[in-house]
Image (cartoon, rainbow, N blue to C red; front, side, top):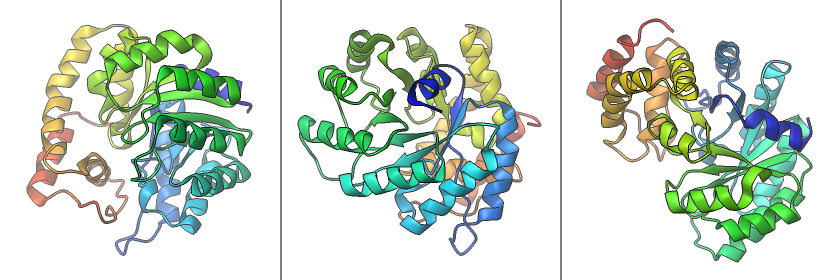
Length: 303
C-alpha cells in the first residue's frame, strides 16, 4: 500500500485505537491482543492504530513495541490496515518508524515528541526527519507540545510526499480552519480530541469528517451507529446517543487525569474482553466509577 492509497483509505470511515492487552502482572498478553483484534476487525473500522495513545505506546518497552506491531499486522492482514504509533525523541521515533515499516505496518501515526518544549522549526525538523526515514505514509498528530501551523505543514507537505495525514488533538478551531483551507486536499484530516464523538459534528462542518473512536474498543456497534448518524446528518440519533451515553461517560472520564485510557480498558473488561490493567503512571478506575460505567454500558444493549 503506497502513501496515496493509505491517504484515500483514511479519508472516510471510522478509525480506532485498540487497547494493548496486559496480564495481571502487567506483561504484554499476545493471545489476548489477537482475540481483541479478531473481535474488533469485522465491525467495519477503516483502519486500526496499533500502539497508539489508547494503546499505551508511552508505556511500552522497545521489545514489546515490536511484538505489539507484529501481532497486529499478522492478525489483521487482509482485513484492515494497521498504522503504528511512533513517538519520543527524533532518533527514537525513527527507530520505531523503521521497525514498524519492517514489520509490515501500512502507515504511521507520529505522536507528539516527549516533554521538552521546542520551537516550531524544531518540531517541523523532527517531523521531516521521521517522514524521510521511511517510505510508508505518515499522519502527524497535532497535540500538546506539537502545534504545527498551516505554513509549516505546507512546507512539510512539499518536502515529504509521504506525509499524507493531519490529526487534530488541539481543538483550536481557528488553527484547524487555517490548516484545512491552506492545505486543501493535500492531507486526509482526522479528528483526534479525546472522546472525538462529542466534537464529530462540529469537525465535519469544518471539513474533517473522519475521526478516531476510543469507545469502539468496547461498544463497537454503538460507535459505528454514531459514525453513520454523523455521516448522514441524522441529528436526532446523534443527540440521543450523546445525551444517553457520551455526556454521562464524560462525567466519569473527567474525574482524573489519564482516565481517557483507563476508562477504555474498564469498558473492555465490562463487556467481556478484559485487556488487563493500565500501566503506571496511569491508574485504573475506582470501584464505584467502574460500576457507574457498567450501568451506562448496559443501557447500550448487546454489541
